[in-house]
Amino acid sequence: MGHRAYGEHIETATAATNLEIIMTRTIKAIRTSEANISDRTVSYDCYQDGSYVTSISDICDALEWRDEAISEIAKTELDIETLETRNMDDLDFHDLSVAGIKRALIAAYEAGKESAQQGNGNG
Image (cartoon, rainbow, N blue to C red; front, side, top):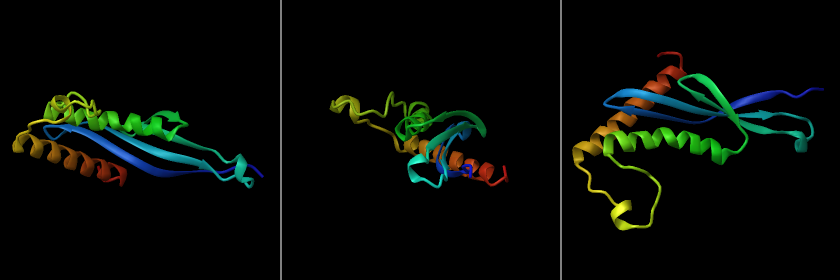
């Protein structure tokens, strides 16, 4: 008996600026259902804007790929160079205007809503 693969949606991240979607990245876990559990495999298919890009075997690498989209909002809306901790107060803490935070949250909300509509075939 052969194996059967099935997918499971893991994560979607969408980067948007000024309510315009820059990119949507989706990660889907692909698992095989071998009778012998030791023969089963998991890989993570990565899609950008609905198109297949690559398959990654390590979940950490797949989530890093997703985080690039999230970092784009921080750069474009909040003028934050990186979301990595650098262990220096002047680099890790930022003075942000309420308007800037609101723009970033609206961009993330609208992008996620758009992504969900595309995923349901409504967009």
